[in-house]
Length: 395
Ligand SMILES: C[S@@+](CC[C@H](N)C(=O)[O-])C[C@H]1O[C@@H](n2cnc3c(N)ncnc32)[C@H](O)[C@@H]1O
Image 1 (cartoon, rainbow, N blue to C red):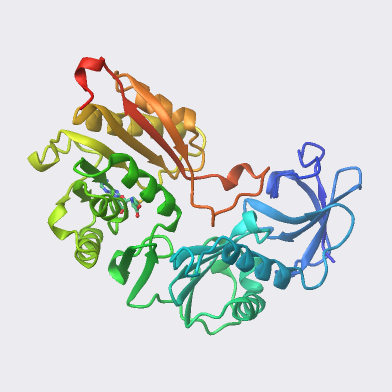
Image 2: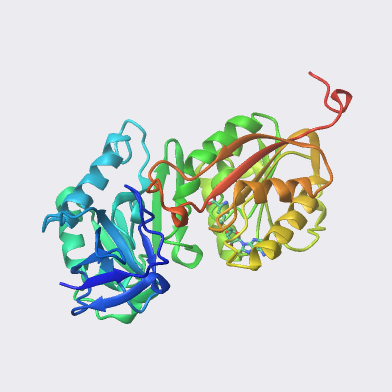
């Protein structure tokens, strides 16, 4: 068995340490690296830390799957896959109770399965592996998933070091022509040309409902970065009039189709626009009662955090001018290093008074391991524009 001895400087302690061990925190590797086999991790003084999956060529060199001296059972993977799937069923996902058929079945470290992400779109399943050890475990993962909850079709998406190793599996690497799912009474479909991430943004599911309720019937809403139209169509179904924008023509086509399917085509207008420009198309001028800004992931590593906050602040400024006093700005960030404080700062830099009324995250099918700093990515700040009461009389 591979034994990983940590450097003295490594801060891997406590009952639930962050499962990521970086390459710089490893002092010595002893024994063969067999992708997918468990490695024993020891502190600098030889005390047991736990067991993990080693990926020595990656910046995150070990991902812990257990802590303490006891080795996990041989069937740890099968048990965790089954438990992750069962937890979603317990939440009513994939059942008639919620009528939600698009959801995340496995969320990496949050389910004790680091580097493995599985999304369910109706009968389709996307298995995304991002590390070499998880790629090596693919045949076992597939069998465990099939046992836990069969899917009609599955396809494999590889990223990171998972792309560098051969995979003993015959899963198709190309997505199907389209993926379709339900979020309660909302039907969404994404054709291959418009797919992003594993297809669509399942993490925003509950936020779409929240925002639709918040803006309410008769409101005018702007949805910036609409992708397949999730926020726009949910709000239109709640009675809002929406202008939806995206830089991608394929995304706008998908959003248009989703508006049609959900019988709100007459309530949503589509405009192609780059959100990082002044957005001076007159159809985007407003005024709006609600604005959702959901920009793409912006690498916010190290010194780039300031740069990303500046881009968000500029976006918030562009949008605030078209938001009525009392209106709601929903500012999203899926950049890992950006916190709610950065979102607050972006909003503060508009120079307008705002009140944060909610802070949202990904849907509950995206659990996070409690001490895993790198596991939190989606942050959604919901801000109400302030001003004098006379600016927004009670009607
Ligand atoms: C995080 S996704 C939005 C997800 C969507 N709001 C949902 O709930 O499904 C970001 C979207 O921004 C779009 N996008 C990327 N760069 C853009 C830009 N410069 N201007 C406008 N849209 C952009 C992408 O095509 C993508 O649809």
